[in-house]
Length: 187
Image 1 (cartoon, rainbow, N blue to C red):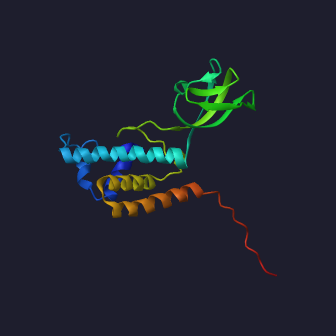
Image 2: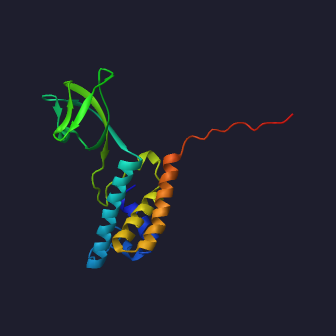
Image 3: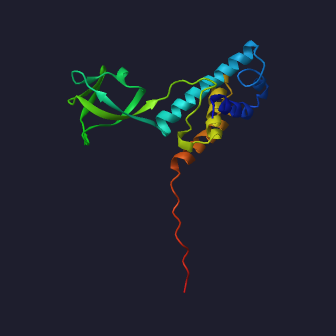
């Protein structure tokens, strides 16, 4: 699913279907200033919500091999923007480390690191990782609608979308495999 598809859904929730006739959604390339500003706000809201979901609710994880130079691994040497170190291990054993301003400090020369990361900002045509199918696009769109209403000063509307967004996230995050026991038969 593309960014613009999720934003399209939130535009419909916000009752702003007139924006769908303009690029990147529709065929009109000449966009009036106000509509262009709203479309850019929607993209910004998408990225805010994507970041919030990925850092607070459904973390994006990355594992990679790293090399420490003088017992330091600068954060810039990692392929993603690190949010939290989940595990640092070498030869199947955990490696102790400290987080410092200049990077990750450890005694080993080579190790594997698993960390959560913040996603890069996406544009309209970019594909969105939907967290392994766990997150429905409508919940994503609720969050975009919430942020857009907050930016626009529509606080009552924002509260409605906030309730829907966070209850949808709660449902997604608390889903476990359902265990069903056979019903008892009384003799």
